[in-house]
Image (cartoon, rainbow, N blue to C red; front, side, top):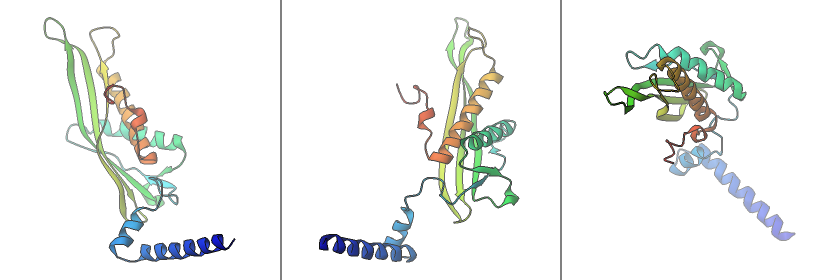
Amino acid sequence: MKGRGIALILLAAAWGCVSDLREEETMAGKIIREFEGEPVVPRIANRIYIPPPESVPGLEPLGPFLLDGVRRAINLDGRLGVVREEEAPDLRLDIRISRYRIEGMEYDEIGRAVRKRVWVTADVRLGDLRRERTIFFERDIQAFRFFSDLAPPIEVESRAREYVLDELAKRIASKTITGWYTERMTPEEKGK
């Protein structure tokens, strides 16, 4: 019984030291503040604002579709409510579409691309507006799809692009909520 009492006293003393260090501007205080044991989205955050995505010139038409997909995926998860900027959000998610590419993957005997890949990447930054800090910045979150408009199964570029933007939106939402999107990766991406 004495051992438990001493252990509790030592634990309380240690906790007091740690909580004091959190307030100090020492190196130890800064390190301890960084490891709060919080999930990616702080526990007190309920609302997120997502402005229209930025993009490199020429990719502006992709923004509204990607924005709708990210908003829909975050709303379906249910942990955060997507709000307008004037509704005092707790978090801000900025998206920049950095690349859109269609590449030939397989060619026929006369040099036509029979199998293609549509590929889109985006840079994403999640900010905590209450604490005025960046939670994460992730470059080149990607999504892609192989398709063919010449050989069965036929799929046109616009349909493949919609699929890729929807998948990219789900990856961005997953990264925002959980910090990971690896569960959405394809076998090609995992190197299998």
